[in-house]
Image 1: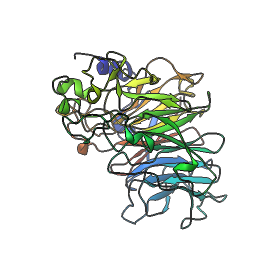
Image 2: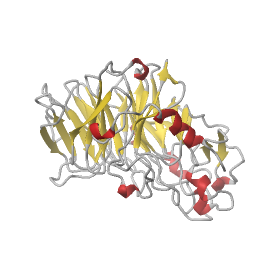
Image 3: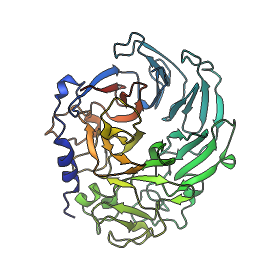
Image 4: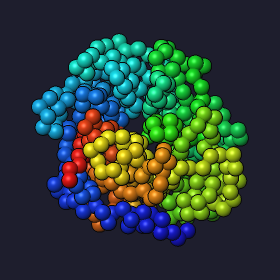
Length: 418
């Protein structure tokens, strides 16, 4: 399949990226933006959250060398660099969210609630409330990302512990299961009461299904709805070389953004979205050949992106520091691919999607690039060679944008001035 989809995306956006990376913590940014290192080497920083006073909390994938998994970072002298760094917790995970004096954090099985005092110090580091417990976590897609709406409801991703719901996962020739039994407890978004303790599956509801894995999600206050970024399936060429070449497999399927309403079905594992045909295609495990359409009952994506770039964070920008074009738009942290071989890997940047009235409009663009640390003309063949991999996003009270890196544990701060 010959297609210039990715090339067109990059050409459109990179025209405006003209700030020297050397002056911006190694990042390339549009004119007027500046990046600095807010912190470095704090551990495997996944998602991040910031209080109204500007204190940043980072959730680590695993405890750092001091044995802490939630890191509190404060810039007490207002020089743009965290100078008061403490931590607590001894469990890994991804999700973290702050609202008022409530700080939510997740392990791969549970959702916890901490209380902050007036100075944004945690009151109960050793005795959090357990809001949700016993969520399924197996050997893949185990992280529990979270967001809240304006009514104290918490939305939790429970990723599918499978690539395409085959009888034997990731085995060539293994058929897809119909119906997919994974979807009863995973492969979707679950909704819980954000203030009630010790909830289990039975206390919540499956808000949306048919989502292979969602790491980035956020609540859009303009239209009062949930938006998510799905990680698309892998290994089409490995399992079905008769239908997919290496080049096709590297560019299929699209990474997809969905606006979700209660009861929605995004179609996994029975279909995927093809960014070239711009259609929902029947998965080969269920009789597809790369051309047969499928997912007639599945919702369409709100927007789609190149394959295998791992969208790990989604943030709607509501601040006033950035130019008007960014207001209420979506930033997406693309963690970067591992499975496009033998072709070069892609991603490792923060993208921006303009929104109007709660809906995406126009084209998406690369906003912050250079996290990999490689030269512009150097290809990433192995993700381990990337210096940094964007993972979390947060908006500061002054409208600054913070980006976490779960490779070496950096926190980047992006500001704008005319």
